[in-house]
Image (cartoon, rainbow, N blue to C red):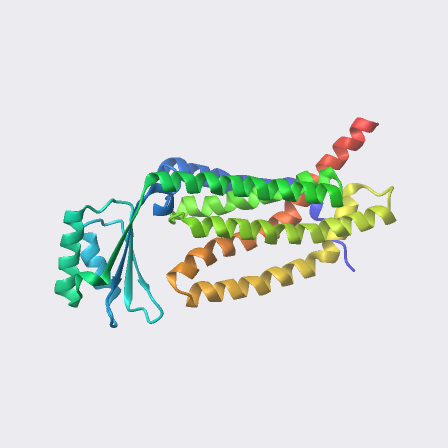
Length: 292
């Protein structure tokens, strides 16, 4: 097995992530934050049963007369429904006007419409629950990794997970993709996926620590990463191919879930090797220096 000196460039790995995060921060400031969807800001969800094949562009043209930023997508098993999501609260008067416009274009009755109002209170509660869920997930991972390995491994794993979450936020900030509940589900999924990849490397590091106690941490990590590199790349690639297929072929609801997964898988593969491992080296050397 050929051993590559990955840790020789650990400052470079940190710099790459730092530059991407800085770009994300700039866009975050320019755009005034993330583009929160109606799940968080509140608004109106409208479902229209067209009952036949239709051009989604016609539905978007109608909705644009009420809100140009509204999201209009196909829905239903046979794509015979239109799903409208807008951050505006559609009044009864506006609802009547929208129904009349759809009736004129598609010949549907008022019974084909379902209006659901999502209040800002519900959005705030969802944000609070999402933050709590993410914190509990990271706390559980920290405890698990610390008990199974050492606290240094636990902190390094959390650093990698925070990196992955921030990278996903950067992409959403730059592209201004609406952040809805599916994004939170994707984050929690990636947290579990990324830590699995990290633990494989940490397990190899622990194994090599027992065999070579007097070797420098950098050499141990290089050996461990080199021996698990093929496994990490193959696992990420096979998963990525499946998720990309879902994104290309799936319905809009699936795409909303698949996109953050794609970003998270790429970031998770990177952080497991180039973030978690160097952070562990830094902690290991700091502890040894303190004991000297």
